Image 1 (tube, rainbow, N blue to C red):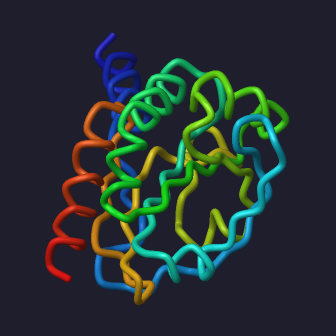
Image 2: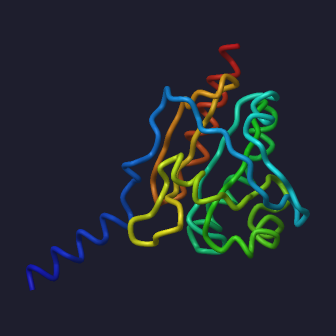
Length: 177
């Protein structure tokens, strides 16, 4: 009984706990290009190009249309205009359910920001991999400054704080300029 409880608790911690392997603030963000959708239309994202316009928020999510990912996308969609007015580009990236990103960009993201499927190489470059769902990414948000440096890393499987923390970091960056 105690062993079963301990194994269950360990599994719960792995599923709900933060990603421990994520890149750290202060390091250079790996450049990447990803194909996805914005408002149901094909979209290509290139980090280096987006950084020419201002800071970038890249948020990794496990898979389209899972409950937490849908809730997180809706929260980011609600705040998309605030990110834009702060001069930031916002993109969600995943390796899970990428065949559903066109519909996800319309329904969950409400046509407000793009979502893209990333390569396995990009996932590994950012050290984002779920232990219990190999091939899927953790739920981690990065704020990257115009020099390509990561200024904020926030990892938590619960989606609630991702928008609040990334928006605050973007505002701090743009008000310092």
